[in-house]
Amino acid sequence: MDERLIIRPALPADLPQVLALYRHLDPSDESPPLDLAAQRLDELQTYRGSVALIGTTGSSVVASSTLVVIPNLTRGGRAYGLIENVVTHAAFRGRGYGKQVLQAAVAAAWQAKCYKVMLMTGSKKPSTLAFYTSAGFEQSKTGFQVRRLPPRAETAD
Image 1 (tube, rainbow, N blue to C red):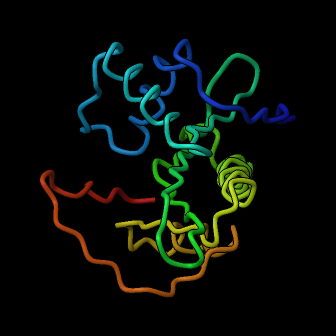
Image 2 (image 1 turned 180 degrees about the vertical axis):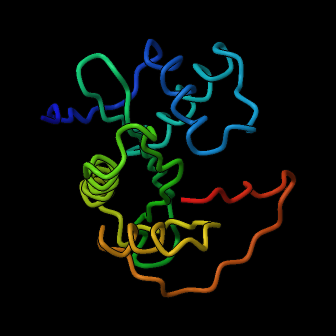
């Protein structure tokens, strides 16, 4: 029987588990030192409405999603939300935890009066694209980017 997922903002004390969780997104990605991670978490919270959400079962962090609320000068001055770092621990996938954390991030964006919420994925996996569609997102724009780090390598399902 699955434990109930509790979704809440990440705290500095959660960072060791959060950084370990991100290894399930990209095992080769460089983790920041804990003091830098704590500084970045603090900086994120200076953007009104922005939050790094985690989903926990028992004492384990098993899913996450980060919402950044971006001030805007169009759309009547309404902000928009950008979601990043959506990841579920490999041992907990398929239980709906990722979708719950993602939907909590969208709800936080609506609470912050965002007029839209966006996310991008570099994945071409049908299962990943279906996940975002099932969470209420539609593939609707063309994204462009300039990178200083290479994209994540795609792993098999």
